[in-house]
Image (cartoon, rainbow, N blue to C red):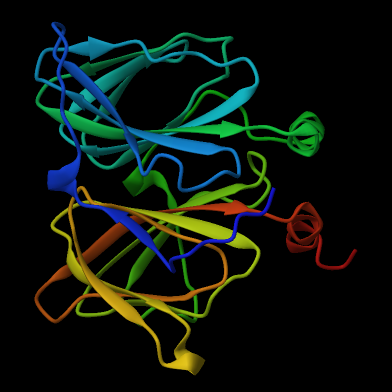
Length: 260
């Protein structure tokens, strides 16, 4: 189903996200519910220091977690992974349980991605080994022409590694990303670190760019098509996780196999 969006972007600010902690010191809130109907729902978890959680397991959905704030650890079949910086995790569906334990107050974004028949067939054909845990510093750096010369960008999930989702980060001081719209890809942004930057979204040819300030903990969604700039002023940081979902399977296939 294709949704006709009435905005160029949607944002929830960090201080607007509810934190209704249960008796175990865990809170979970859906981010921008109802905005995207393409099969992705995102939630923010908050864990108080000393608390733990065993997230729900899914047999037929992909889960991607962004650990954005606070130190802790994750235990699965591969042992105990220390979460000492921005980190990422993709569980092995319902085959391997895992537990997240907070050493200090933590927050993380928990994304649940539906798999259609195309996604399942692609996954069966080729995918990365799961479960998959990476610290940000372990992710490979890449260079892109829409980013400033001193902007650090890292790739977490490449095209085709795990269905139609792609994942990476951007970090800079006094510059960032100035990107033309991508009509086949929706994009979410999770602000981390000491973020204090401007996100401008719209269509430059129509001179209708709208700008909003982004800070750590904010979450935004840019529907496919709109131009978008995420740039900080000198002395301020732009630091975000970008998370993309291909809307068109045919274009996704061409992206993976440009010679086909």
